[in-house]
Structures are given as structure tokens and as C-alpha cells.
Image 1 (tube, rainbow, N blue to C red):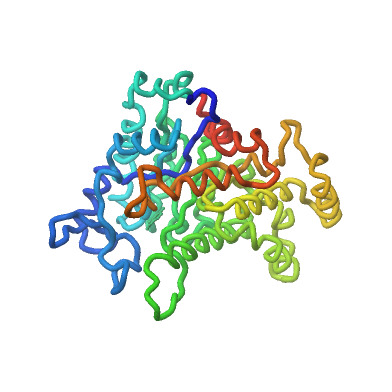
Image 2: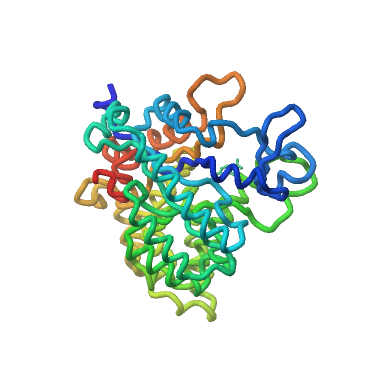
Length: 405
Ligand code: 5CU
């Protein structure tokens, strides 16, 4: 029964709202929604979907992208008690400033209604919602586009803060057009941190590279391009000192921050050996990984374990001596336990699904393989017990987003 299993909260789950899909229907450039020859609607989203080959002409879209009943059915099928939904990529990035400002305001109201009008009676069918009476929360959107007035972005931050079911904002990696290390982003970071909102950083553009002559469909842009985009964006943000200036900024990184955990020591070494940047930060680069949050969308227990271990180390990382002491303590895992009884990195990792992307393959049943792989990863991390799993499955989200309120 629901009451005896751990609370499950999905922090990486998207929608394209009806207003947003209408915006895309009016466009003749990517991103756009088009009607195919057989009458079905197709969404063309990524630059790779414009060309020839397996991914050309986009993907079919339907109610799974916008219908709340579909979201709830998906949640029920997978035992998800609560979802923190976000507008999917590419958000408002393609709009001129005035339109982006209006669209952000309309979308934030729409997403608030999507969550808040889901009635108490229906919500109470979930064990968690029996206490909170809420099953749906959301990230809002900001008009982050080149040329927008920063004051208008700050007004949107205040709008999001004032909406009861919105607990953060979702954003891509472009900021106001120049990336997340742009000094123009400073007042926005300050306002978002002061408002206590969580920033969900999500990729869309991939990286500027060729994936070769062979047609590999979406596999490389999504499997590598997306996570490398996040890796580079967050490395730049850290190197610009954003986390030194805004230690209260809460950044949740999609796809477990891509390659950032795996490359953090190499990056730290490159920084330490480069006279241009070696004195720029207040801490060793690895330290900052302990200031971030990570979704658990890794699809494998070993990858998830790597994220946890690196983030656990970050919380113990100030100097080479401390690092060596950390390694000693890892060898006797018990010594490292936090008062709550788990590695500190466990507190920074949160379950996610990426719904409605990666649906079941033909012939598969109602459960989504992509969801089960991520649940199995949480179940399979060596050394985690029920306490660690419960934190990652839902308790961390309750704390980070204040879902009990
Ligand atoms: O399949 C895709 O293109 C995507 C996407 O666009 N965004 C996302 O979050 N996951 C998969």
C-alpha cells in the first residue's frame, strides 16, 4: 500500500502548456509545431530535427505534453506521489523581449492553475497529499532573452514567488544570451536567491560540434550534447564566482549535471595550474559541487554512486589534507555518516523522470522503462540503505521545495 512505501517525488517532469503549444503552432521556424501530411501534429524542437535522417520532421505530439489527466495517470502508474513540473525546453528563449515578458506572466498563471485546481479530494488519494492536500507543484518561467530589461525579469521573479504552487524557476543555459556567467545575470541571481526559489538548470542547445557523417538519430545530441551543455554552463558559472557571491542560490541540475561530477578533479587541476584563473575562486573547484543539487536521472546505479561520492567529498573538501583524510574515512564508511546517518551527498540528489520524453517503446507495457531504470538505479547504489533511498526518492524534495507547507 502507498502508505508503507517511501514518498516518491518527481522533480524532473515537463509540460508544454496549451498557451505554449499555441505559440509554437504560429511559428514557421524551429521550435515549431506543424501538421504532417497524415493530419497529425508534430513538434520540431531541436536543431538536429531540421535536417535529413532519422530525426528529421520531429516527433508526434499529443495530450501527453499538456493534459493534466495524462500526467496524473503517468504518476499513478509509477507510484509518484508528487510532481514538481516545469515548462520543457526551449522555454521562451526564441521570443523577442516584449513577447517573452507577456508569455512568462501568462505561463506562470497557467502553471499555477494547472497545479492548484487539482482538487483536494483527488489529491488525497495519494498518501503524502493526505497531509499536504497538494500533489502538483511547479517551476515558473522567466523572460530570459537578449535585450529584455532586467527589471522585467525581476518582476517575473516576484510573480513566481507570490504563486502558492510555484517553488522555483526553470531556465536554460543561455541566460540573457551570453550564458550563466554573464555579469548581467547578477541581480537576477540575487533576487532568485532572496526569494528562496530553486533554479532548475536544463539544457536544450547541446554543444557546437559535429557528430559525424553517420546518422545516429537523437542518440548523441541527447545522450552527450545535452549533458555536456549543462557541464560547460555550470563550470563557467562557478568559474565566474557566482557561487562565491551567492552562496544561497539553489541550483538543481538536470541529468545529474552531466559530466561535471566525473570531471571535477580534472577541472580543479586545470584551474590550479592556470595562472589566469588559479586565484579567482574562494575554494577549490570541487568544493562548489557540494553547493549544488542534482536530479537522479542517470539511468544507472554506478553513475548515481559516482555523483553521490563526488558530492559527499565536496562537503568535506577544503584542502589536499582534507581530501586525503576524506579518502581514509571513505574506507571506513561508518566514520563518514552524517548525524542523520548517511553520506552528505545523498541529501543533494532527487528523483526525476523526464516525462513526457523517453516514453515506452513499442510492445512495452504501461510502465516506462526510462522511469524504472532510474528507480532501479536508486535501489542499486552500493552502500545505500533504505534511509538513503528514501531521501533521494522524496524527502530531499520535500526539504528543498518546502513541499510540506
Ligand atoms: O527528446 C528530447 O528532445 C528531449 C527534450 O527536448 N527535452 C528533454 O528534456 N528531454 C528530451
